[in-house]
Structure formats: C-alpha cells, structure tokens
Length: 74
Image (tube, rainbow, N blue to C red; front, side, top):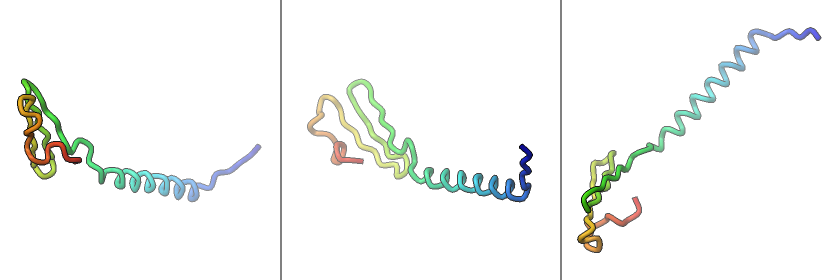
C-alpha cells in the first residue's frame, strides 16, 4: 500500500484544526469561573461578586434578617 500525503492539504487541515480549537476556547472563556466567592466562619457568611465588587452578608444569629439580596439567585 503506497499512499502519498499532499503536504499543502495536510498543513491546511492542521491550520483549520488549530483555528477551530482557538475559536472554541475563546467562546468558552466568556463564562467566568469563580465569579462568586463564598467565605464563612465563626457564624457569618459572605458572598462576593468578584466582577462588580458587590457583597452580601449574613450571620447564623440573624439568618432570617440577612442583608437584602443575600438569598436571591446570583
């Protein structure tokens, strides 16, 4: 079996494959992982939006009286 590979076609295929991977990677990076950070300890909880800097807080002593928006969907 004697097969010859056309170098121009192989390089074109490789370039298209690399370009496709770059496009997929760029599209997936639009959803930032870790945008919301949660910290807690000693009876208090804080949620921080790392993009806007907005923070919400609550404590176990006043879990019903948490800051406005603490339990809203982020």
